[in-house]
Amino acid sequence: MPLEINGKKLSFILDTGVNKTILFNLSENDSIGLLNTTKVALRGLGTGEAVNAIISKKNTFKIKNLISRNETIYVILNDSFNLSSKMGITIHGIIGYNLLKDFVVRVNYKTKKLDFYNPKTYRYKKCKKCETIPFIYYRKKPFINAKISLDTIGNKLIDVKLLVDLGGSDAMWLFENSKEEIKTPKRFFNDFLGEGLSGPIYGDRSRVSMFKLGRFNIQNATASFLDFASTHNARKFKERNGSIGGGILRKFKVWIDYPNKKFTFKKNGSFTSGFNYNMSGLDVVYDGKQIVKEESVTNSSDSFNQNINQRNSISFVTSYSFKFKPAFKIKNVIKNSPAYNAGLLKDDVILRINGKETYDFTLGDIYHKFQERDKKKIKMMISRKGVKMKFEFKLHKSV
Image (tube, rainbow, N blue to C red; front, side):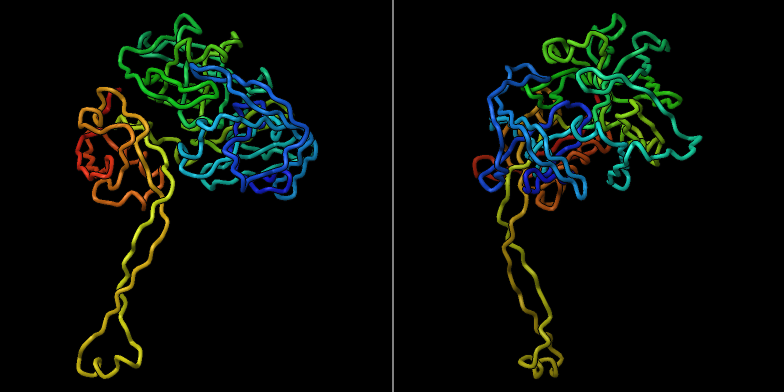
């Protein structure tokens, strides 16, 4: 979402999973004139150490006609925390509680729109298909009650308390042993789950046979099970059992009502669609821009060629243009995955996938191809230290 800070237009992720406004990936061109700064350390999910940051107070935020003039920002100084490369678009930061606390916000995943309403005047329409669920705060983050059923214990429903994490892309994360019944199912595979403030996050990917959110029943949802090391900081809230993210939330139109401590859910057209993992074993990131030479052929109809055309000939003109287009590389290859077994390596630059140039893809397009269906054949051309190489493998559905 667009957010102006001290007059500078930036791009932020709206994230209910954060209680601070965090800024990163600033270049000299993105200078926002930070005010009243002091150094601090921040901790989050991940197995690494705390990250150094600057806290800046009394900044001005603006989203269209919404203005606040006394906002605090935490600026991460670690250059390796590059969210833009993982998203494929420029991301300057994440914002949550500081923005959401004053509004009722409607999130429409289908139209990709956010609507902000004044909680003092907003009136909910009568909606028989909606489900309203109250939440509690812990450190200014919202937690709801839900139920899950794991294949290791049959059809028994387990009560769980989950963070509603609008900024997370996975369907569900569950903390192993946060309850006696919460254990990784028998069918799973280990994977890189993402990057937290405190470093990389690894876990076991599997599924839950049933996820119950109020009246809504979601079957066979993907779920990642995280061990204690990756979630040490998050487990300070003893009642927490995990989180739900975009993989589930995108199946609904969601009203976020912080002033009244409630969420309202209404299922959309994607509610019945299934869940799939990345079945390639590849962690792909955006790798900047590359120069691409494009050829275009046009029919010349100017007066110079009129005589030729009269003799039943057609004149064509070939022209070339050079454009900057996105490049993508492999950041990580999961051991024993289809891509690993095919011979793909970290830092390989991906040139083509199934015959199509990758500069015509978005990062989301690439991951969609890796999630399409079990046993789908993937053909790739890559560049390894300047040498072009071809590889082929089939996607494999582990769970």
